[in-house]
Length: 361
Image 1 (cartoon, rainbow, N blue to C red):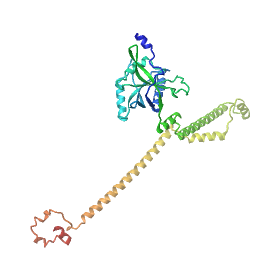
Image 2: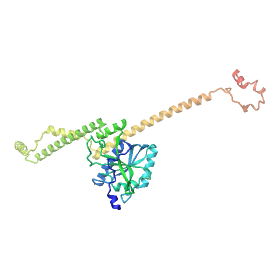
Image 3: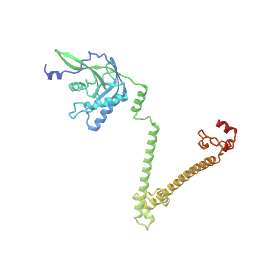
Image 4: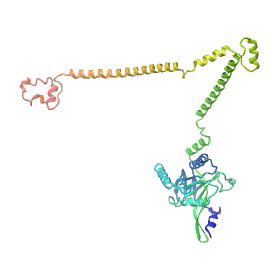
């Protein structure tokens, strides 16, 4: 059998061959794969970009649980996996999630081909039997009565070896999986499916703000049009009011309403003239005054604290200076000259109380 004939053979065993693998898939890798595909479509402007990533999870015998995933980089040829990037990312995840191991890899395709077999061989260094998870967004699944059908456009495959005409080759066996969702994951998926509508108060607030701004913009346009029509009307004949009024109405121009114009003038006057030089100078003067007042208040407070500290220091110093000379003494009374001159002390004249005598003993 030639190599070309071998390549044309299907790489997936028929459905009669079943896999004894018990596979559980969490929602997080599903969301990661979908987001990866959508982002690459927008970045490359392609309907079928090349998507490649790694799967992380736990394995206990024939029970496998896929918990997380991350994207992979490829070399310039677009086929060879960047092994350095893979090892670095795997070690980073290992530091944060020590229990997660490299389980397999994922991609987007209609079905596995010989190209995926070549890619699969690059992952055998990290796992003896790396699993393959394929996202099939264009696949139409069978009815729910089919036990092998999945409700998601995903299919998992387990690698195996097929011996055909005394030659071995790598193939895949489709492995059924179940979606296992915890309470926290269910809440996160529901929130994501609703487009992040968990913060309904924020969304309603933004919607009301948008409606208010739109209404304000529309009313400003009406006022601008009214003023424009009034200015256009003034350019007509000013000598005949009746003739002018008839002409304004006939051409769709608005007559002058002094009350409305005064209201508009008051409204404009109430707006901050930020671009006016006099306004900026007055504003900066007031701002400096406010800052100076705050500085003086801070300085006054600091002076008050310092004054209290000085008062406490004076009280402590005065109490120390007013202490009696014959007060309590410490050991090693060098001032007594080695006890030479007890008689000169007037019979222990320095000890004026029984407490001093007891302390000396």
